[in-house]
Image 1 (cartoon, rainbow, N blue to C red):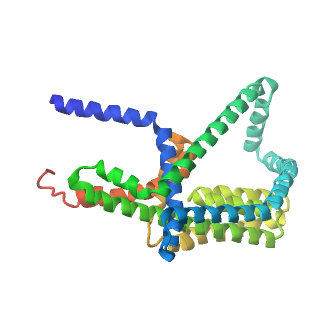
Image 2: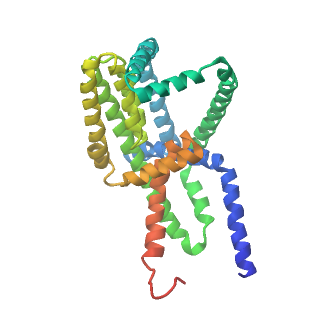
Image 3: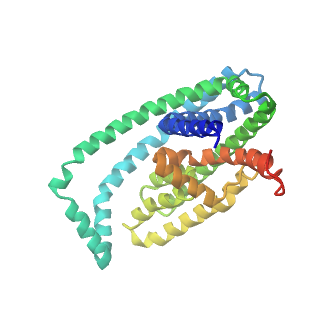
Length: 338
């Protein structure tokens, strides 16, 4: 192996280690890009409808978001807080129901005994240190979120300058291709975010209305959880269903109707609504989405799970245009690539 190849391999290893050490910085930056694109979608729409410059359109969009968010919060927050308190009061009864169900199964009963054996004072002493760690992690996450928001506003305020900087950093022969690549990646990500937002709002409203129509307690809280977890496809809606099902255990005659309602909404969102909204932007295979969530969740925790799908949307565009069209399609098996 020549010295040039050894130096090239060493440089790749060093860059890989550096990127791994800076993974949280890169995660914050990519989250800022996602937020900036989500702001750019209404800003671009507003500029197409009215003769506005970008700062004015961005200020209008942010004002609308703040006003609408305040109105929705004022309208729903009191009921939401009431339902959270109600859930806290219902939790002991719910745990008793689950304990009674566990007691009927010998295998689950042994698991319950093992969990109870862990709940001793000696084993619970480290809980204070763990809570301090959680508090420190929450403070760190808050700082990262603030930095992400600030970066997103700066990116949304002047995206073309950042695009030109990135294009200028590429070789001259590839700059036009990079420009098309950035445009297509932004279109795919913006379309995915718009489609998932409409899908999440629809799931929230239908779940809230359906559970309220069935007379189930905590309908607003359950609908909100189901709507938010729509942004985590494949595994999110399944976990979201656990809350209304757990509440339905308190009134067993409503368990089957709640399960049927959630199955209808979950499958309708997954197989009808979301494909219809995303048919012109991106089509993610469920296996690819799930593997991306599992991998990034294992590496980066919850933030990795939340940003896995936007990252896959971007990588799918890059893979199609670079890996498939520029490498695989011209590859002739009779001769190696130049």
